Image 1 (cartoon, rainbow, N blue to C red):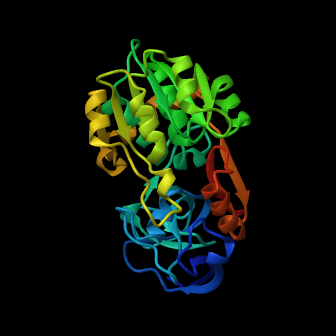
Image 2 (image 1 turned 135 degrees about the vertical axis):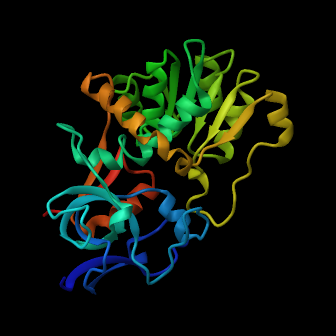
Length: 334
């Protein structure tokens, strides 16, 4: 087994507010020879996710990302060298590795991919962790049916759009919340939602009362903060809320005020926290369900792809500014 050289994206400093490109650097590093049970992977796609900002702020369940450390996220790539008998060079795999042209990963942390005619990049989106998050929220927590009206925030993203389409497949009425007319148009015309509220130009509470005078019965929350309170106080009594993301707090050192106990009591609402790591056992079911909907042309998905490793910092900045549209990926040329 040989040593190798690569380029790698590292965090230079902890961002203050919304990240900037200057918070990252691209450096040349030498990779040591593989140890037993390790493989070398050339990433084809890197996944950029908002939870990375919480790692930088030392506030995420999965650990902290400190200055001087490489940024690590999910990726899809090709094995170039293996020191594990279970994996061979040339196989397409997904797992967690550094933002780099070449990265070393423990074989136990990889899964091989075979999506047939579907692109392997979906393993980072609607057939990956975002899809699993949505699937768990719909099938295990909210369990919507034909009598339900479900609202989902960040509806144009991979989690929100998957939540809505899975709920539609179960017969529910779905209303999205997204930022800007282009995203709202896609949510309705492509993803099939009944309506989409533009949080940049519409008053959410007013528009929600117009669309659902009796109030929605379910809410999948990707945002937290004041939006969570707005939806809660306008919900139908005895509604169910899945708490998944806190987009309002990602770029802030202070916590947004959430609903008061009196508001939760008044709504007779059930609030449930969702951590995707608890639902790994559902991954195969999720892939089968979502892939089946895609192949039946009953499911829309969208990717926001930047080209080249050096584009990763700027793509992450765009993501944290809310300027992405779909699953944010970086494509690395082989």
